[in-house]
Length: 327
Image 1 (cartoon, rainbow, N blue to C red):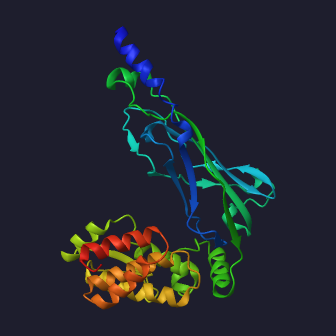
Image 2: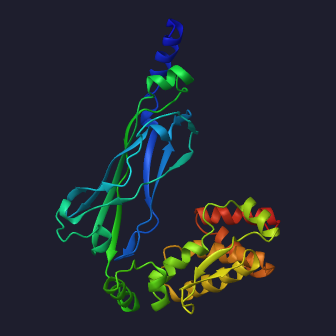
Image 3: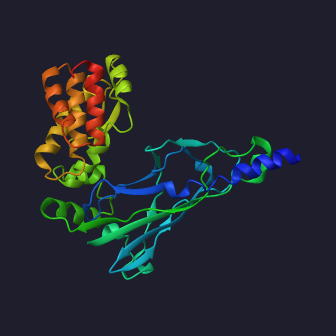
């Protein structure tokens, strides 16, 4: 390596931590309360609170700690994948000022024998009040990468960053939900499964399963509008169906799937009080009505969502209404 190039790399590395204090790690839970056996829904975001762009690279990221607190004692959780087994190449992602970047959160398991709980079950299987926090690190760029690809960009982040703390309450299920959980455990099924949904279609566990097929997910409004006009959205799916021997049935793409989403989504809204994804269900139902050509129903649902507090669903609804010329 020539001396001038070494100087360039040194100067770039000297800037790596300059903006570290401006980068925050936010841990968010889609629900602050869930029943026993219900999956958690935790999401991580890097937020740039500074005035300059920060660059991060997923290939350099490791998950140092996911910790759970109960009874004022922090328990170390087992993490499915910590990341950075090797760094063949580095792709940088920019986080501009006031912007955020979603960070994947790996699966994790908090064994009860790792702390004050002692019956060997994961924390989601035991009622209680919990707190969760996450710590991640971004490693230095390996020398063999800089020799091949040059120095990291200005504002590259290196170091360790800890999230805020999220409170989650796990409560005992009642009524049909308690029956569904007991049956699932006796028959060794996941509570959120086609088997349980077939036996207990009005349970919260069944609604959570159907939500996976109702959700618009990461699809952007432009994609949904374009492909629904071609009859290709929503996608063909094999959906839960308690009347079928297999517990599921195929539904064609386009209007057939849109009708299924309307029917099942409206049923969930009627039957499930305080459903954690209520806004998402309403959004999907509204869009599905638009796909079915029922414009008035679609506009009423989507405009109501758009006027609510700032949420991802409200922002999505506003974009979709604008695209349709319904604003």
